[in-house]
Every structure is written in C-alpha cells, then in structure tokens.
Length: 278
Image 1 (tube, rainbow, N blue to C red):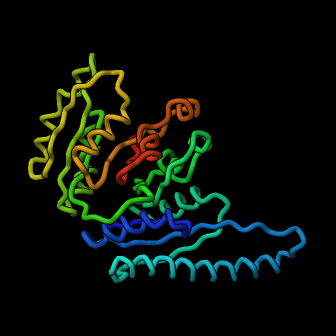
Image 2: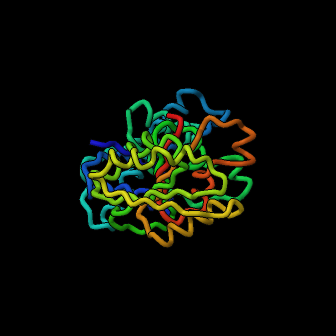
C-alpha cells in the first residue's frame, strides 16, 4: 500500500492538497498521514521548564486543530476517513520538517497545496519550491483552487532523457488508477536525434499500458511553460507529471529555475514532480 504525506498549514488555501489526496485514496488503497508543522518562539523571560510545559500544551492543541480541520474536509466531501494518521511537529523550517519526516518514514509521495508566489518569493523559496528542489520523495503540488474530480488522465511531459526509467515510475503511478498516460514531447529544431532513436523500443515495453504519444514540433523561441499550459488546456489531464534535475548550481536555480518549479507557481492542474537524478 502506498503512503502519502499530506501537509497543511490549516489555512483555507491548503485544503486543495487534502482534497486531492482524499480523492486518490477513494480510487486506490493509500495510507494518508496528515502533517502539520508549526514553530514556537521561547520568550526570554521564560524558564526551560515553563517553555517545555507550553510546548506540550501547544502540541495537544495543534493535534486537536489538525483533527478538526481534516475531519471537516472529509465531512464536506461526504467521505469517511480510512487508514489515516495525524502528525504535528514543532520545527523552525516547515519544508525541512516535511522532507525529514517523509524520508525517515518511507513515504511514497508528499502532497500539498500551492497558491503561487511573487518574484522575490520565487528566489527566496516557498515550501513548494523547496520541496521540488530538494525532496527525494516525489511531490504532488495541488493548485489552491483545485476542485475534486476522478484521476483518469495523466499528462507526462518529457525531454526523452532517461525515458525508460521515468516511464517506469509514471506507469507505476498510473496503473493502479487505471489512468491513461499522454506522453508529451516538444520537438525543437536541431534537437539531437539520438533521444528519439529508442523511443519506439521503450514504448514496446509498455504495450499493455494506455500510453498516447504526442510529439509536437515547435519553435525554439516559444515559452515552454506557455506550451505546457496550452496542451494542458487542450488535453484536460487530471494530473501533470514532470521530472526535475535537482543537482544544479545555486546560480542556475535562481536565474533559470527548474521547469517544474516554475510551473508550480502558475499551475492550473495538480503537478507530480519526481527527482530526475534520484
């Protein structure tokens, strides 16, 4: 059974990630763990004992808040909670706490809502972009305005590099859902032909899977994000899947950004991001 760590800050915008995870659990056997991270500042006038007592009471209070928050979403969806857990953790950095908990407890996916960010927040990082850039556990970023629907169609954007290994992960996600995979690749002028040489051979391994190949010729000056948005609107997938390269330099991350990270700030459909170098 797959394990999904569903993170929240208990806000209205964070509900979308929970709705997606709950929908996923209605289609396949999934164990959901709802995770809330918060930070407490110790007043300088407090003793260690007083602060320890305060931390204990806050942990109890936040555990109750998380229960109420999650149960209300289940109630509004008309679903009954099954195989779920609740975790609250006090930590300075939410993204680090999420990554650590997901890794130590062998989660298959991290799921959270994203509501976009301005230019400076993109550079400094948000929880979503941090997880996409550094998490070895795949991340599902769900737009804050997501409305629940059955997960039936997956749009997998690929540069054809390491296609065999990537497609194996995509199919492993799609197969239990009975979802169709639309494989999307943009053909650029002067693109190395070697990338496409093994395409047919790779696809033969997955003949029993429902994979629809879309190779699109395009101009090199076109915006990649614009093209992805265009075909997302055209094909209407339930989920977009991308792989991101995490071992880039700090300068590259700031000035060029990951394609998947950039997309997550303007996402209109949920985005599943795998670590390309994992």
